Image (cartoon, rainbow, N blue to C red; front, side, top):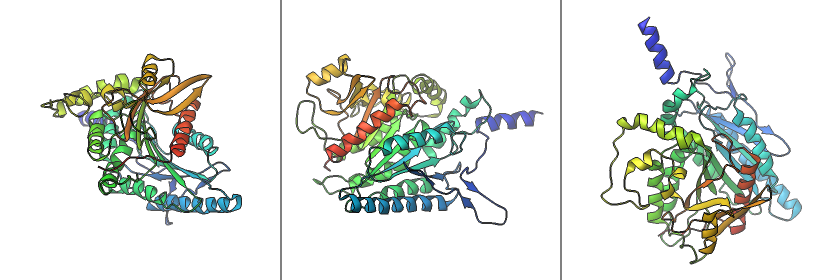
Length: 413
């Protein structure tokens, strides 16, 4: 009896649950059957799924995604030839978070389709969606899923090995063939623990892109924009990338000085109503604190932080020292102060008749291409509300701003 109880407890905390692909069938005695590409008049969609060790279930899924991008490029070229103008094409890669997977039962799948349909209206060429599935939903027992936090958190940091990194890099490379008349915009989004997965899976690619750029030359980013939404990963992991980029990339000028046409290469953004990362995340981190060695810096780091512990308990968007920008109602005191200081406005949003500004934060020590901010509950109400019409509207405005400004202009130093 004791052994059974011990095994049950081990299963619970190790997150026992299905470790399977939802978009591949395995008929007996026959080759694996990968679900075909979904095609609508708005978008096309395919999946790549990973097991709990970060291994692709079927490499054929990645091959299908790359073929889908190539086909979209060919279709865009036909549109451009017929219309006589560029047929800009959008490729959106989404990495889901905790308590989700690539099955039809996952609310993220249907909502991602809705997002693709809304974004497609802004582009003349095809819109391509890539859903990255992993074992985020690892326990089917209602009310007990909270106990899978630690197992899923650890997986989001350690799962991105060669297969996961290769998949993201192959997608990036496939969108970087600048064919005449067919500009491709590559957007990668990670939600919750998916933000940690996306970050871990792209860090080396980003650092290589920067360090491989000759000094004085403009950096060509591997994707047009990486977005971590309500990311559930500690700011201490974000700090290293922010500090590295700060060392090797020329900084944006302070408010009121220098050129204003800067775009983000990376954006980490969280809702002020995200209680999961505002309240639950620090408590959960505290329970695992005894297993981590954290230090006090001899002097404050580049963002003015004195202790690693303060970055361990919070995500970057909920750590004020990390904030590079503000995204809020134009009537809020902070946004008003930014306008008075001549801070650069990246984008303007109108939601329910109210104007919001995405504007540089006065006095921020985070002056590189890794932007960090919060957003009000009127845009995203809580941790899981990232597919709201309001957030889709904000993402559209950000994409339009990226295209209008002509790309992220950062110089290697």
